[in-house]
Length: 150
Image (cartoon, rainbow, N blue to C red):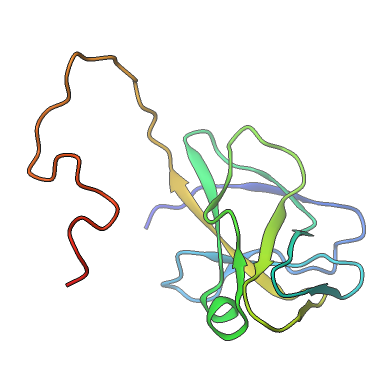
């Protein structure tokens, strides 16, 4: 398994928040925690930016994908609304997690709660080229469910 070094700083007053880390040897995502100063309630249908208290230096050639935690999504209807969110290698600002509540019940986030996962991925850049015609495929222009559900 490849490892990369990622530099991290904490915003003042968030030193008590646990740094992102992998929960197990096989985990692909690091849990990131809420750095809220007081409990934050997400009402049904509401979307809020939740601070992590972190700033990251993602190595060039990589990105961080911000993904929902499956347990929060299944049990409470809490999801990352721009999933996967992207933290680019040249961004140095505060990391905030955009959470939404798609359930019918309010959900309260406490300081230090695990709210999302961070997955580091290699980035491949495309060289865009105009062509006269695209190559043919069996699928062609079929999309949006054209292959059915069975």
